[in-house]
Image 1: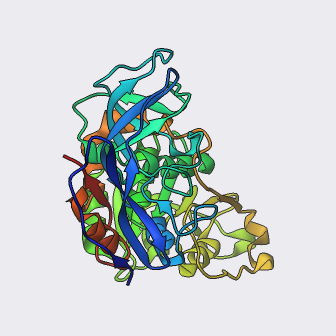
Image 2 (image 1 turned 45 degrees about the horizontal axis):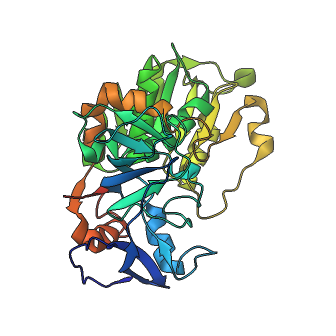
Length: 353
């Protein structure tokens, strides 16, 4: 378990506290300068920031070069604009915004860059609306707005899958990305979305966000249930029938998911993998040759960071079910500990006063 030092004081006018990785296994609050906007910049007061599994990894390994041992944390931010440079357009003081951490001039926010969003404020240099930030309606709760970055990861997976109107989809894994993908599939007009997981309360959340059916893989035969839900198509050359599922979406990262999909997939089905597999997965290419399955990998969000914002704006009540824990900034140490404990929680968000 990482060592989180918990001394936390009030911000001064000149400085503020930023949560940083300072050594392998150690994260602590470090005094940093409060940002100031130049003519082309925007300062955002962070109101909420999600905790990602990668934050725990950064703590474990001691940060990310070139800031090894001094890496600011937090890359899932939403906040209120408090300062706008004279040359910036499309935003005003008081606007609520979500941020693209990948676009920061001084490195990826919270992932090796000079700034992290587990901090009271960040500055967006050379800020452009639609590139560095997007203004959102004020009625969206801050903790929901902070889902924008991880939901962009899910939305990219949805786009990579090619699913659309009339498609039949199954999502493996009802964690934050799996649930976000399920909402994304439904927003694209997918005909039927099934979510598979082993944890009952996660399956309950899947139903709350609007999926058509769920399968508890600990109690049910997944392939047989998919045939019931999506229908069947003939197998190759008289072999057993296959589910008529068009798209399989792996948000679980377990080898058994890939094995199940490759054995079940109909001709020219699509398997999209957004999950991180921590161990190699063996694939028998001879066995899957006749299926002509299309295996697609998905990483990050090349274009989706603000595309998904439309879905969040329209369906924020559904997205709020993804959040499991909301903690204040001065308990960010506990938030990191929760997020790093397998099975302890789903999605943790830190909020600021």
